Length: 326
Ligand SMILES: Nc1ncnc2c1ncn2[C@@H]1O[C@H](COP(=O)(O)OP(=O)(O)OP(=O)(O)O)[C@@H](O)[C@H]1O
Ligand SMILES: O=P(O)(O)OC[C@H]1O[C@](O)(CO)[C@@H](O)[C@@H]1O
Ligand SMILES: [Mg+2]
Image (tube, rainbow, N blue to C red; front, side, top):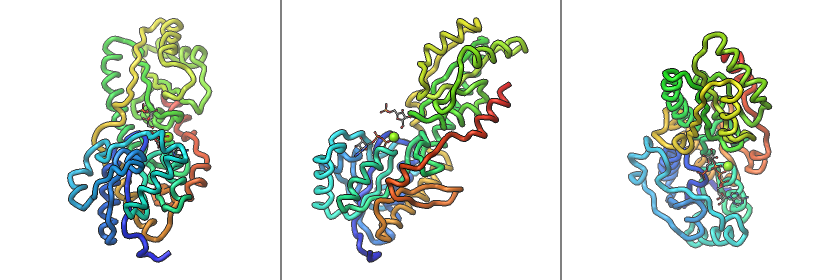
């Protein structure tokens, strides 16, 4: 395709917001403007595309944005777009407004949507933006580092009170079905144990026994991290710990606090690199692509192929955690 074919692009954020999404939008907008493209901001993910909820973006419109958490374009989970009729409406709306390519910042679901638009003839490029780091083809997703840092800071605070009252603090962290966030946060916060959905665990014979062993060695407080995707309910686990070890156990669900806040250096830099890269792909006439990070370099995959790849938690990190948590 002729490099100058695309004159107008759209950009949207979809799925759960992630710190650094604004930085990615900013980079994409300014890169596109540098290539003499017009940029349309699409509000509330695929909702805005279906209903024509658009805003023209110039370089100034994305000023004072790089440091902001959330997404100024708003985000949504759009049920209407899951159906073919909704996808057709979205495609027609893009056509009506002369949008010739779309940058989609979001998670796996958002990319499945992007794939549908590409198949209809509207080139799309996905940028991985989710705190879960669960997009299989990329080693990194925008927002992950910030969420890890926020989780760690929150757990540091919880440790102070657990230490003072000699309690066990059981903390549930986000991550949907994946344990990446829990593992990294748990290591950074010096957890005694980390429960993730990817690994078998035994509450009574493993977690409780470790707590009891620790108590014998004089350990007076305990920090246990549990990923939200684990099969057990955090409250049930707390009850078992209390019953088996006799230590008073408090549950904290970190929840959405992990999605907010100013993006870290890493997230701002990766977001800026990915925003630039995505627009370069569209400019080069390459649609139905997913931006991915591999060993700190950016690459891209066909969306379906990228989403079909496999990714597990870092086994070495898991083993290290078990070793140093003694
Ligand atoms: N199979 C699909 N076909 C078309 N559109 C989809 C599909 N799956 C998801 N989408 C669209 O993408 C939106 C976001 O998807 P989803 O809620 O799965 O979040 P996500 O992008 O995976 O992000 P995260 O999991 O990080 O919150 C959906 O609300 C829907 O509009
Ligand atoms: O904000 P919602 O719609 O409750 O979604 C929560 C989910 O979104 C995420 O925050 C990001 O994908 C997950 O960690 C979590 O499971
Ligand atoms: Mg998802």
